[in-house]
Image (cartoon, rainbow, N blue to C red; front, side, top):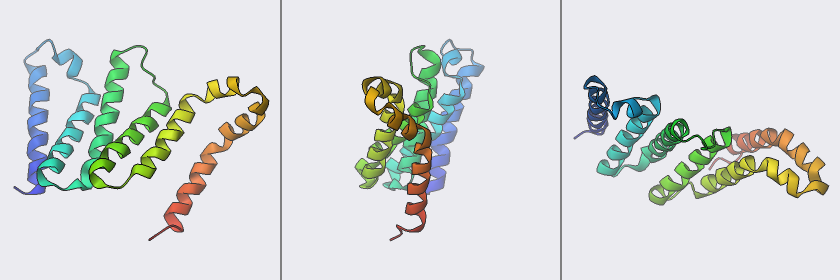
Length: 161
């Protein structure tokens, strides 16, 4: 089976089940008929295609869609689930680490994003524990996006192999 038809077939089966649950007015439909579940379905279709064809080129995209879908779904269901932007960075980091197991690349990127996400999550608490360096932490938390921008530009234009 061609790669595209495999993905499209799995996607249509997933969409069919998704919409059928809603049309049959099943009790579970109210909880699963949401846009995060669509992200999970698309990611699962990509993951299935990747697993069946032994082509790992779509692993990262599939894991990103699945983890973000799970995050947004769970944040609607569980009131104490963190909803700040650091969770999106955290989910992308987890996706890099999951895909790195098969693709054998992406451990560094996943680890870097994981550290950034953890620093973002706990930046307020970091200020409390480090009162003497509070000014430095405030300065760093204000301008850290510039550091990310500069590192990204360096990787794009100067670190080509």
